[in-house]
Image (cartoon, rainbow, N blue to C red; front, side):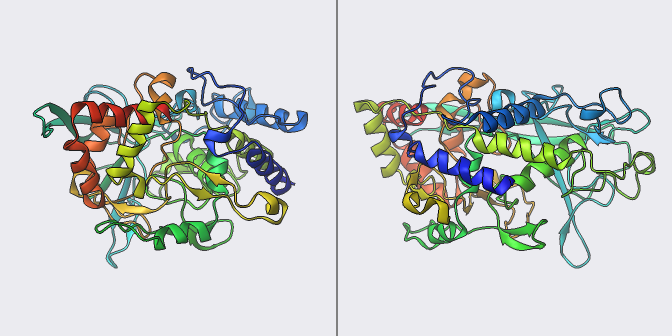
Length: 443
């Protein structure tokens, strides 16, 4: 039933003219709620499912045994009480400004290298650090970030101070972490995910095979699909380390809230965390119906329309292409060619991503592999709607760890395959840089 509903939803999405410039969308206001609207013309039953999913996304979950049993199951270990706590306004998270601020909308991934040179979760702390625990279970510890300033000079002499993050751990409740590989990750925006989920493997492989300028390649990640029990192409996550939207949702509930589901039925405790293991619940805490509802909600969140083109944004778009940014942040992808969509299968999407991994250089490397992705590779993040990030939340950060406070800083951190793009941006005049940024802010 869910598959049929999602196909109808996708059909609705495409019929609305999903090439952003074509869309006739009624909620064109670029306001703080821009990421929260459903696609237009949802039928009443679908809208009810959307609202139920929205409730789940905003719901404050409680510990097992609480009076509100419908929304209980938090922990035993967790980072936040709700999904929206990490995705304010359905938008981006942000990094703390200093070591004494809480990681409100971000987490730290963990892994180690075993004797066979495989990269596996930490034997005690698992694959991410959980700051909090339910009563009787100690939270795992605290991650703090401080910054090292990095000065960058444009060709015209203007300077920008970037910030390089450094992670420190304290109050570790289950022994030392070292040796460990770490990666700080802010929460991404969650609109348009149904559209990304609809992009076929064939389209992603074609993006990988597409002819590109020297120095730019791009490849898909290959990850484990829990439902199918096989290796498939990755689409979601900062390293394209998750195969589809449903698994992404279940993974976030499990890792961030400690809520089990049919895909992740075991509590997020390691064998050494006895008090955590004593709190286990044999029944999945997120029901199939709830997982269906929140999947539908996130699938149906619309992409905010860009601003109409002006002479300035057209010039900025031209500079975006000249700088080679468009080679990875491509504006042309096709939706999945399903039989029910035969008449619309050529419809183009404009997410400004190729969904591929690219080597971004040492400056952004976390040195933590994730499936086929190495420590310096990252999935190209979508740019659609990025111009509203600060409108939705003033502290919204950019790049995987939120180190960039604005788009200029984000571009200047690009290296590796994006080194030419960064250098072309750095050599633009101040007026040209402003035009390129104005184009991005129009998306």
